[in-house]
Image 1 (spheres, rainbow, N blue to C red):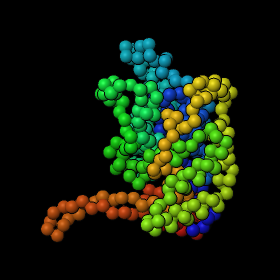
Image 2: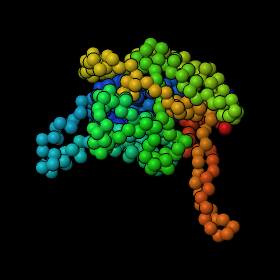
Image 3: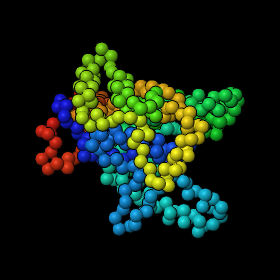
Image 4: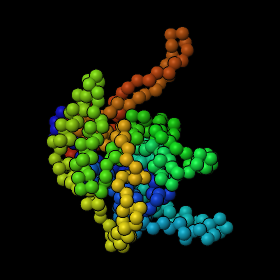
Length: 350
């Protein structure tokens, strides 16, 4: 493997996940998972398509489809259900946002999607299905959901918890997503965390610590020789990749906010709950067993992961049986913008 190669360089990645029904839109934009991940992707030479920071659209005005950190829902609440004109305005106003998000999905090479089972999000499902209909790979992160992650819920009695379950607030300790995603996304592209959930993301050495942590989590046992050889190659590639040498500091060091939003961010950072926050996911540290970032490093270094195929075939007796087999995930069809291709055009396979 050539340690200088990076097959993700020059690609485009769309970051799909909930933007509404989150604790704070300000925090979600500037300290959420997209803000943490974007510097890593840019270090890999990937163009980041982020719905919080939509590109300007030529010919349609500078503000077309732009989303701010303040929700616009209040303007519809007074008469949404009694006034057809309000509902029509609701559709029209949000069309621009849907339009741009779907186009960003169209022009991306792959998606990274954050899909916690406790947050309602229709747009994320739409974008995932749209990407998969275009045979684009989706790296899908579904974190565990436990009452202990929410201090107030952890203190309530069992009867109240039963009522909450009845109304849909369910624990999902393993973070296992809906079974539909198994076939839409593929189990090989599912992860229970990014890899940073146990780290203090405001610490000054966050990014350098993160890379070491992810590689350590992903280390296979001694008896899995083939996987271990691949892991060793990836470790070598990550350590020699020059792009990661600029990844220094904390998430806050990479925050860029416009003037009006910057004041909102500073105000939010002074809130007691935010001053006390140390960890990404509900301020609770956990160690992902299958971190998405390792898969990203694996692919960037030249290893296209396998996928499971399911087919029906006839038995000698004339019956039908279901068979599964592994093949290279050819959804990772990354087209080079270099007319001469990338290096010699070869890739490494497990």
